[in-house]
Image 1 (spheres, rainbow, N blue to C red):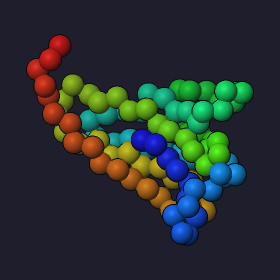
Image 2: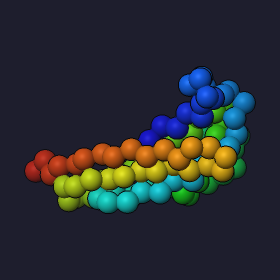
Image 3: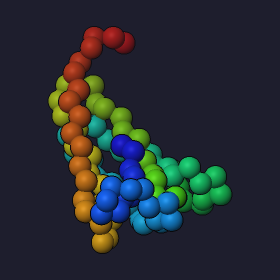
Image 4: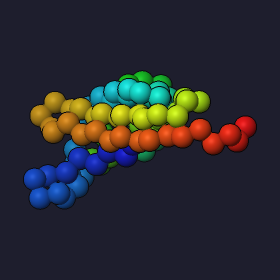
Length: 93
């Protein structure tokens, strides 16, 4: 899930450094987070990340079962955002 912190007009806020918390439910799990800042000391394996230039991301791994994954991003003072992904079993090993 790629996060962009936007203003009321939908424009990226390039100086936003909000802490974004991620929650994953369903047939997937959160395996990492990042923001592109090479000098950051925040861990990649976490459920939260500070935005850099208004951006951050969560890396999700699906389970082996077909189903749905819901990823939610939250940050104090900002509107919560969620996305739903539907997965299916492919039979490919």
